[in-house]
Image: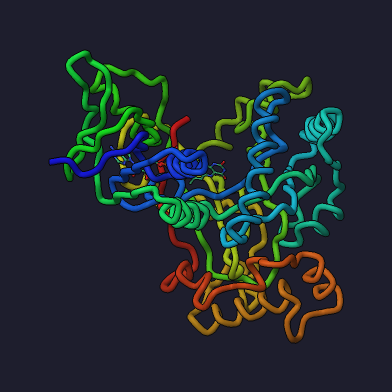
Length: 397
Ligand SMILES: Cc1cc2nc3c(=O)[nH]c(=O)nc-3n(C[C@H](O)[C@H](O)[C@H](O)COP(=O)(O)OP(=O)(O)OC[C@H]3O[C@@H](n4cnc5c(N)ncnc54)[C@H](O)[C@@H]3O)c2cc1C
């Protein structure tokens, strides 16, 4: 049975598949996209959404990252900022005086390649991110970092693709490539019939490794990351925050002369007990990530107690009632947290003069915070407990 035909078939409805479909459709190409579950089912539906600029190695990696960020600017103008794009910088902080030289060098080197970075003393760190605890001894702020809510971005782009004539078949797994008599690829077999086309883009994320069954080996390893979503808090966390393990996560740090091998050897930083990256989504919830491990296999069960990482969260997370775990409390406390966040972030009733001025600065026409649709931001409220796993995700590295 033939399910569909197109000039290009895209396999996978994550951020790579949907953006590929969108750019092709924009150029007038007839596209069919197949997705085994729903759009953003994979890593794109579960990630932190950091737009990392500060830690990209200069050269092609940094150029790509900057270009990517400018694309989001364009998308937020075209699609409306329904996907929480914000460009309010990133703060990398550390807790050990011994790391000061490394972070100072990081700030200087980044400035030398044109990024807007500043080394911050502890009091300045707390001014930028008041939720960080007292043992933070310094940090580096980079104005170019930002964030999006990836699942929302994929959903918005998927809807736009459909409007532009892309046929999106969800709950449709591509089971293998279909080849003609001469061996040339002429489409894919799926669980719902054949999809025929001139070209196939395999954008199946970590599952692309399964192309090995077709004799196509892709050099990738499987890394498993998790993230937690808290209930809303009243405080506003504008920049995205990176903890000290950042120095072991990104290749760029290793190129700095003050990067000592002892730092690289601090495996505890990567042991999964640390949940050091923090950002705040619409509605006031914090996202905490990313404990990780490297099973290098397809195991979709959680790798550890989901809240284990939260034992080492380096931030003070004042709940709505002043408790030191985010959102500890029932629905009433959650409502209070959301309302207080709304007050501070949007400059609503009861906001201080400073918060109002900040809110005015933040707002732009079509901004997510002024055009929030009914019910927006509520689907993610954790109901039963303060900290639950945001969905465990797989990522190809
Ligand atoms: C917890 C976590 C935090 C992260 N944080 C960040 C971050 O802050 N910043 C950042 O830049 N990156 C982050 N990442 C990485 C980022 O999410 C991924 O690099 C990105 O989402 C990969 O997109 P993708 O489209 O290639 O893959 P995916 O989003 O995994 O999409 C692949 C899609 O293909 C579908 N598929 C697979 N096989 C088939 C098939 N045979 N037929 C049909 N459909 C199929 C899947 O269902 C899936 O929807 C994070 C990842 C995780 C898990």
